[in-house]
Image (tube, rainbow over all chains, first blue to last red; front, side, top):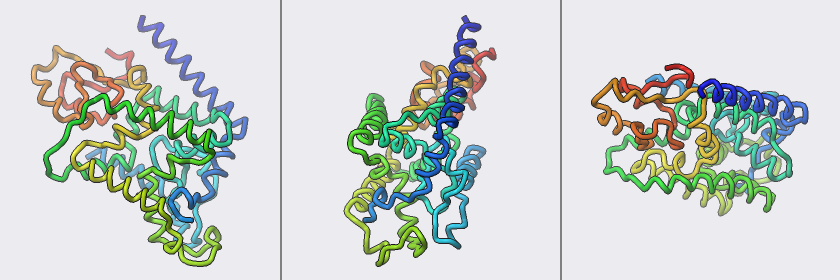
Length: 47
Length: 270
């Protein structure tokens, strides 16, 4: 039982790591950087 | 003490762009492509990295799936569960400090902790997707404390503030609403331990899903200690570790592991 749960956890971890790689390939990193580089003044109540 | 050092270290590491002092601008370089694993507003003049919840809302607004963010948060959650809430989050630190003020303490019913899932699914994802605006950011007390107030105090005149007039003169109603929300959570923190983390934090809601299945977890050894109940009172999230040591609300502060009956270990270790 412990072996199966270990294998499942490792598989899920690999899926998450795969999502990171896939996201980087799709340009998520650049999208995050561009979004984070703009100061949203309206978000802090400055009009 | 060790945890305090981690919390202060995380605060400094994620907010160390001192170039804003000289250039009157926020950081726009490579590190902003990275999300940190805790709540930290990237509108802070000193912010070096991006907020995962702000990023999640941005992707909801543009109608895209944030694969990188899902992978990152999933990896962190699967390895340590909510540990970043207890060890790294600066807003958690602020709430903990406020809770040290000596007053009678309140213990709201545990069922209220499900409201953080409403905050995650409703306000963070659905509202952003349907309305096209990051309403969680607009109401977030972390943003008020780390960005709203510092920007007003900073009051720069650089590239990003090209409109005429000072920033103070452009403060709108939303800013006062944000201040009220911050004061609400701040004053609640005096009476209730970490109310934002318990009832409102969308990031805590994501990590909480992993507490029961994470690689590192709290293990209970009933036979080792007969005085466990003394330590149960030390749990800031009021988790009954003797019944459910990996409860969804546990922030893995590890205060309870001072008792020999509890240990923080990888799940495969006996």
